[in-house]
Length: 273
Image (cartoon, rainbow, N blue to C red; front, side, top):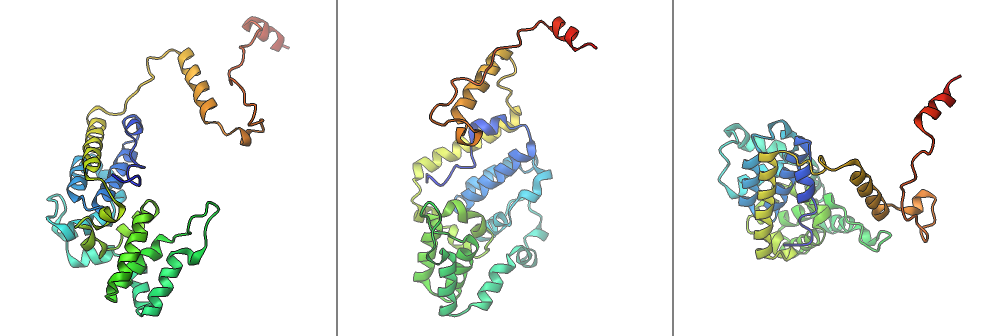
């Protein structure tokens, strides 16, 4: 499994998530990544698990999954024939990619898009190239259209190296799925098959548990004293003291203060006119 996978999958958070829409959206996002890496069977398992549960979340389904089914087959039985037609799939394609292909259909145009996609040599404050995922997608589309296979392979490797930011845009490109069915991106990234298999099992088991048992309520039986202690420890661990007008070199040892020393009766009396 690549270090670029799993960032949207947090077993602890998924099991605690109360909003069904958020859970379903997370399912479809992870399924799309599996499909992009060539593991369409794993994507289908997740999709089938949550499809009926997440019918109200259909807006979060990516057209990329439809392109994956078209490229790999067979279509899932739940997808109606009207959604499988050439006309229906063409409407899902990103017009921006098609327009860029038509407007830059030369080797010079390809080189220009590649330069733009790579940020024209510019880097961010961390020294990373300012990659433009939408232009990377347009560049590999144009490279394949012009039969520039070596250029296409170079761009694919750039996409693999920046999968964490490029996956959304690349998934919307219909032609990419003809490459992905052979796990092209997974190989370019260097995915470990054994770890990927274990990860798929963990993901499916986690979402199935959340669907069957609902959201966990881990702290419902804890006394208030323990909850306050946990809040205190979590704040001390994660606070950014520089943004809180405190000395970062001398942070507080606790955010808990002593309780009020005045009896409630005295406070009420003092407050009376």
